[in-house]
Length: 225
Image (tube, rainbow, N blue to C red; front, side, top):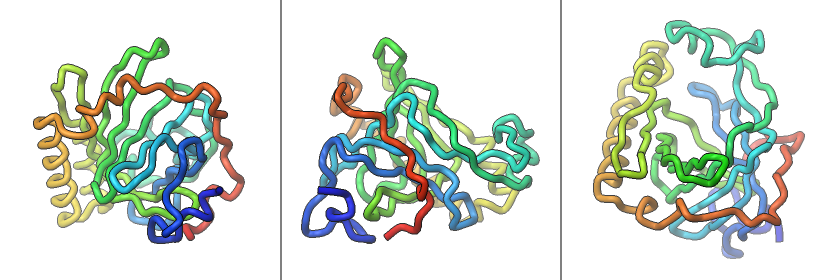
């Protein structure tokens, strides 16, 4: 059974959800545009009405945004980072793998990171548009602002400077920025209460060693259907 038989363009069909081990795409649109600029092939860990969990393996070929001259975006000064033309390129994910957890409808996803010896490092809350499911994966839009959560349950905001600069650059209108900040506060409340997924023991999860590294399809930016 393939993902195409499982889902229609708006969510789960009557046939069910993706099965563990299936490969799908986790994609992000560029801010202020409908064009896709991030694509990460992932393996489904769990998929049901409560949670989508996927694994991005080390060495996965991914699409990422770069400046038009090919230089990395993070090296551009913040004042001009969101003003210069961009393009995309394919690169490998060189770090350790990432487990991504997303509850349907939540305007964020929670990512888990380990070191190369499988010692758990931290959770990372990525504020984003609620993911739109389609036959080949999920699509979203990143909202700049993030949260880091340590194993001792302490947490702090990340990328507040980028969030502020995105507003100055016109990529984050005031109304949307207020919604994003509210979403961040809601995510922080879940952390304070140590709700799901933090209390669920995902830091002890390990991928199936038989899973192959997903490949990046040539039509990674195909329309969501």
